[in-house]
Amino acid sequence: MPGHPSRIELERGTDRAQLRAAVHADLRVPPQDGPGPDLRADARHNRERILGAAREAFATRGLDVPMAAIARRAGVGVATLYRRFPSRESLVVEVFADQLTACASTVDDAFADPDPWRGFTTAIEKICAMQLADRGFATAFMTAFPAATGYEHTRAHAERRFAELVRRAKEAGRLRADFDPADLVLLLKAVCGVTADAGEAAAASSRRLVAYLLQSFEAGHTAPLPPPPPLDLGHLHPVAPR
Image 1 (tube, one colour):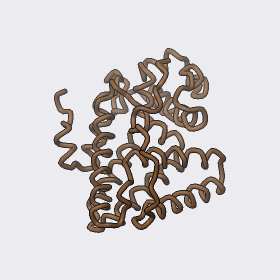
Image 2 (tube, helix red, strand yellow; image 1 turned 90 degrees about the vertical axis):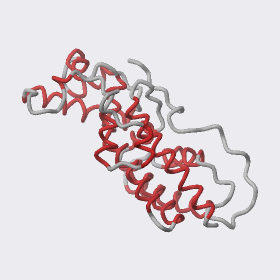
Image 3 (cartoon, helix red, strand yellow; image 1 turned 60 degrees about the vertical axis):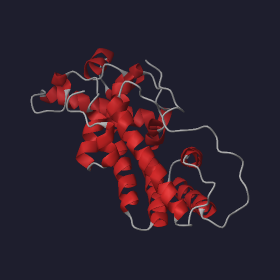
């Protein structure tokens, strides 16, 4: 795709603006409906209402919430929603574009830390904090969007960087040798469980669980584990088409 950051470019390292451009490259939104200055004020208002309603709905009901329910929550007609976002995938990708970019940038920053263990623990803490702040994000992060190649490439970039961070932390002797990158998926799923309830209890539960797990990840905890599950990001939560 012309102008689309390649996988090689993402692998070599990109800045936040390039990561965000990759996420947005495949949005199936007609150009006249984008957020540019030529969009009429009422259309911009409708677009923001739809995004806000979708963000709330995804956080409380999951990514398979009916599009009609999102339209009702936004106070617009279903036809208006589909003019702005012709597919559920385009809506989900737009809602979580900034969070995915921030997540990828967090992993890049952790990778740049000269202390691999500190980078590893910081990346996990920050990703889990993002998950707590926007509970729909973890599901979006672990959902496959085959048509949104920009989104997929940015997430794959984050996955590869995290795997490298794991390797470096092991080589430094700080991360247990049997840690597998798939364990990040287990951690995110566990945090989703303990943060199901709202309020300060959810934040406290998340922080404590992450601290427990980070201690168990550190080298020296040598009791053997069962083999890692066949999990990776992007293949856990298929999105319903409508």
